[in-house]
Length: 217
Image (cartoon, rainbow, N blue to C red; front, side, top):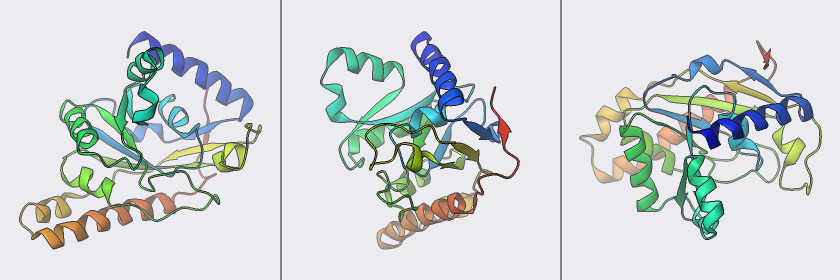
């Protein structure tokens, strides 16, 4: 973990713990080493640091290409393991970088919904995460943030000091889908991408907010 990432993580943990009364559950379900895909709902600008900061390893994040125009901001985003992608997050270049980092044993955070929710409810999954999952062998860990929409959703200009819970789920087994993807037709492959994405969203939806939640210190 580089110094910029480490210091940013410490500052985020302090702010989240004090301002949002932040709670984290089951973070041990994220492997400390090796490739991993973290799949989360998306309700706020603060979701990425809320997910990454409690983990004892660096997480790669997707960031809009437009953020990489300023040299200083580009340096900072890259220090935080930011991966530039187009507005829809589906560029071939972005996918190639994601897969390369997974092959190098790194972890990456993806949002199956593709963008922040507008009403606080879970949105349908886009097929892009299914493509990433099937082209890699990385374990997929679903997770869910509760309260970030109410605390700092699209409808708010400033964050509100409301409680937020982060809960990690158990890894999802996609071995059967990955095996089928190697031999199936192209039309079926496109169906598989969406089926995998939908399965991830179903697992995210199953997570409950207050069960077995620990204070993070």
